[in-house]
Length: 253
Image 1 (spheres, one colour):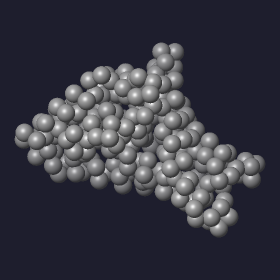
Image 2: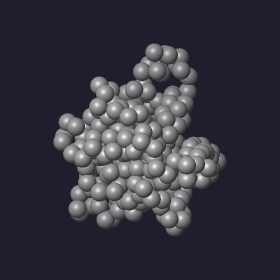
Image 3: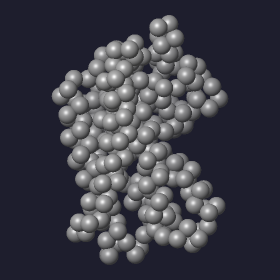
């Protein structure tokens, strides 16, 4: 066991999670809790016990994520991965093109795995923990059952054996990922009124969309986009209505 790598990975993963979730929590749940209450997607706040549950499972998730990184970089597996150290090996053009490729791969992977985890034979053993947050907070971003944490980190395994991955690709990509993940669980909608009906916005996942998924358990399975939900007809029929209700409520107040 490479403990040095484990703690280094845990530090990076943990610092991203705590920095982004903490800032979001402080701003929306403490500093402007009363002033912005009318903006809350669900007009109520989770209880303290919900925050502690989300934090405890998130800590477990970060430990599992770090262990998988150690395994992937072990002497027996590391040489067979596609990781590389010098950008010149693949060039700057590939370096930047890799990010949208990773984005699409992760978005599709998440949708497929998410649908599977909602199957009745799997849900209560794997995904129910995450859905205990029916009114999620920023701390819910990594609140997974250990089995789900392994599944979630599966995309890293896929990256390591399909795409040439520079040592900075994962750090940058998953910084973006945790920011969007925290936004999805924020409990507030940050996109402007009418965004859901714009040419671009109709394909982008929103906090309202993912909040509905937590509240009702069915539909809205996407991560970054709504592409797969729209293609496979799994977007909730009341999504646009609730998005507009939230934003009109914001405008009225």
